[in-house]
Image (cartoon, rainbow, N blue to C red):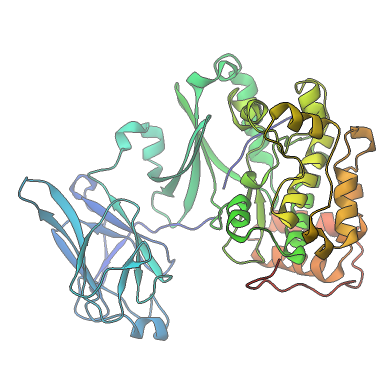
Length: 470
């Protein structure tokens, strides 16, 4: 039986030092800290809030910004005293944290301008930007309102848990900051009580986690740490800042063909890496394809390997009971009892269709009719938008969405398909991944995959991402 594993979302983080006026200070007693301003910029240190108020700016301020923190253009836009954070006691004895904007060019909380002389109540996970809504510098964390008591000491001594990133039947995903560093992670929390499998197969779970830790590919979310407690398993994973492909499709409607090809090429290499290691994902869908940045051309990150094997009620099992949009016919027909890695190729075909069209190939208000269409691969390209899509792209989809697994392309055949023989795209993807890969092992792994790849001349001009592009 093939291994099916689990993962989730690039690394940034925080230095646990506080710079006030002229220097860096030792850690104060954590019990005296009522709040923290976590830095999201490597050159800016954390500010531990102990006194009742702090001012921030490039002049005579408690926390002074300098050329060591920002370039000259950004620094010049920051006021001498830009903003103040303080604790205020209200009439009902409630203590609130307040940010006051003292700047000329603006202080922004969650991208909304506060306004000079105006105040706003800060809550945990509020993002503070200076001079421009996109110039994010700090994330506020209210230490007196945190829910650290809900987490085991084994976790909190290593990580500061903050906002919720997502939620599912298996549990939830939260953003975490590694103590004493500038690193940010996604923490997936699996509830053991929801899974008889988890309660009865601890050895199997440990084997799956070890396999997860062995996965090392630039287009696959990496697992950093695992903390196992009697009630829950905390899986600490790489954080992808660009969000889900699903959200990008929801915002844009669909992708330009060149962008879809760029993502699909990376995704196919991630699947090839897994299949050569006898790992089947079984739950490839836009929600499980993450993006490293908000840019159009960015690295994709495949995540959530086989949650159904770590938690019986996870996303794959939920999909069986819900809308099986991305599920291969053989999984529906045989209840998942008889399948091979070709199920991933079917899912790739559906993802490609959705990326290019903005709607799924199989849909019906009637669940029985929907399952019939999937089992018999009943779909078409009749919508007029498909006239804008190349015949090669449609041919690849047709060869992936084949109901009989033995007749469906495998991952090697997919990568050899004519639609992906775009030299310009391949060179861009390879150079992009090499440039962004910090790990020599990851870089080498990608080079190994590309060794046998012939880079032909680009057959079609690259489509530029822009407003109105479809």
